[in-house]
Length: 209
Image (cartoon, rainbow, N blue to C red):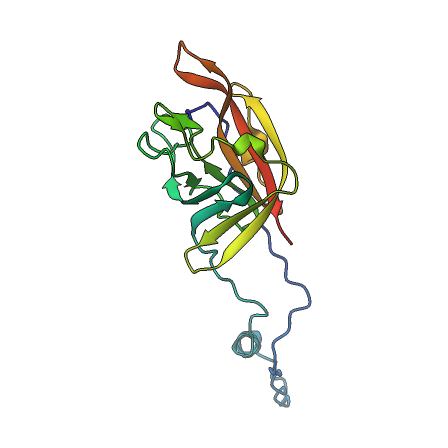
């Protein structure tokens, strides 16, 4: 996997709207009878309402991904965590990590809304690497990501594409309102003058429901 110039759009603007929320077992206090010209205290009423409020839903952080399994191509590997390279591009697994792909930790976690991205090498000077057979994946193939709490999330491949590395890859990093997964490696023609492949192989997958 080589570093390519990509425009990154990894932030997902997720807006959760809660409609029809009510507090279980909470009842507003009866208003005190008015005496003379006394007017209700809005602040006191607000405090009473706040004391009786119970959230209708709780939020739990999505566990970190730790392992990826792709039965179709014989991949079963732990996952490294990747950030950004000094030039601002997406970091790739180190030169000694041919058999271990990495999850881009500045993007969504697998199972969250948005496109989680996992990158891996296609080969090395010693032979094939972890994502060597990635181009063989087709629609309907399954990918499983295991997480730090022991849970797992499954994805179903939609399609596999080859893109020139000079072509913008907004489809990979563009925010989505569903849980998606993108697997990325190198492919296409090898450029002997630079020592890198000229294209990327990208697998597009969505969460299995």
